Length: 285
Ligand code: HXC
Image (cartoon, rainbow, N blue to C red):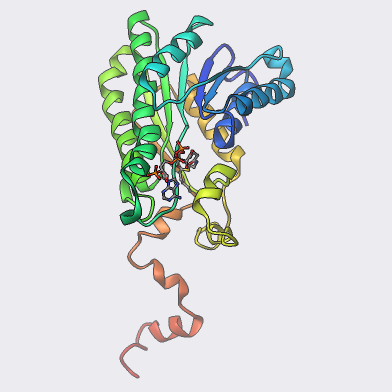
């Protein structure tokens, strides 16, 4: 879909890059010529992912993908870690991908459960964005931030309340800084993915044996393919999207609108129901 050097020369740092969507984005960015750095909490996972991706894309990477163990909930560790990544050459793009979430009845949550999710999603994304933004501004360099949010950042959602609070905050961060930092050449955008199956999310969010509920409730009758998301992300972080700033692009097959439209229930009506609704039929019972 893209010219193979779309991201040539770009250095892209992806939080939560060892698994799931972060790993898929890392792979796609590498294919398109970027140099990629990944961070996450588990060093063994990062090391294995870096090795695997470098081997797959060795013609682009020369066999190297940078990685670092980093818990983005820890502001000092973020400052240190981003400084160390930067020492290998300035980062051009930050992808706030790391997230924490689980399905739970909200009244059962401990304060540690709330803090745990908000620490990753809201605070972690803010720390990472500030650590990169300060450096871009100090060096007079342009930069781009792409954050993974969700459609419930604006609708809210039952049973994932800390995540909804955190993602709403990241959307506010994105839109606020798009204006504040736009004049400095820094673009901030977000993607709101619908269901793109990953082990991390599905283990925590989908009850056993109920994975197909995602297909049945989606207007397109399926879940997303990682490639569909990674191609959008590649475009949004590339210079081709240079005028996109403060935007959130929904990529969910129409899922959230299906839950929102007042008359969407009418897709359940039978042929007989429609026949009964035909002009002149109603009320002649
Ligand atoms: C209730 C829970 C819980 C659950 C954890 N807690 N899981 N409470 N129900 N299912 C509570 C714990 O009991 C503890 O509180 C507190 O949360 C912290 O839990 P820990 O396991 O000690 O924390 P930690 O090891 O740091 O793990 C963080 C985590 C975990 C957020 C809880 O789920 C995680 O690491 N997630 C990362 C990956 C992830 O979530 N990916 C999915 C993102 S999907 P107490 O009081 O007992 O100490 C996404 C978008 C969704 O964001 C869109 C889908 C379509």
